[in-house]
Amino acid sequence: MLMIRLQRTGRKHEPTFRLVLTDSKNGPKSGKYLKNLGWYDTRIKNTTDQFDVEQIKHWMSHGAKLSVTVHNFLISKKVIEGKKLNALSRKSPIKKEVAKEEKKAEEKAGEVKGEEKKETKEAKKEEVKTPVAKVA
Image 1 (cartoon, rainbow, N blue to C red):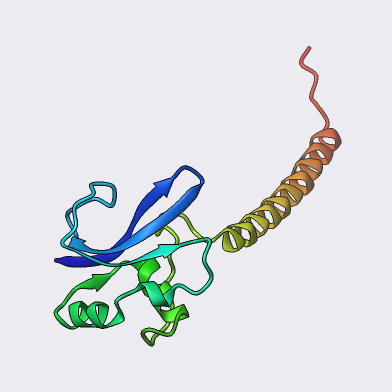
Image 2: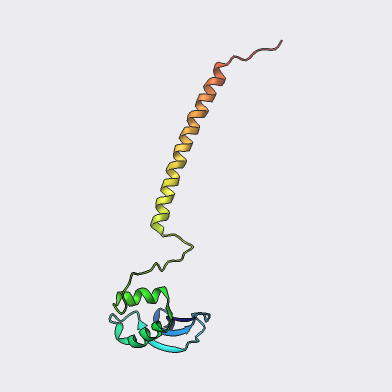
């Protein structure tokens, strides 16, 4: 399957990217690609001039898939229409949601600990009230 994605080039701390058409089995660092569709420099503001929009649309019509980052980038530059996709890893949830879940878990744990403390206090009172029989 063909894939349109970014390939990092440039020096350390000065990233530039190529927009390339490649086989999905090739890794992003392999350097192998079929066609260069443009470039993207993070330090330059207007970047749509560097893309070959007609070629991108041509390859998309022939079944090439976009990476999530390229998809979101092309939507923000209004080259294609649609909704942006979540580019975060599927394995790690969004940090805000994690923080909310942790707070809920702490609240539940606090409620459970409070109930346990009440139960242990009541149990101790009952133990004190019951007389111990002395065996002679």
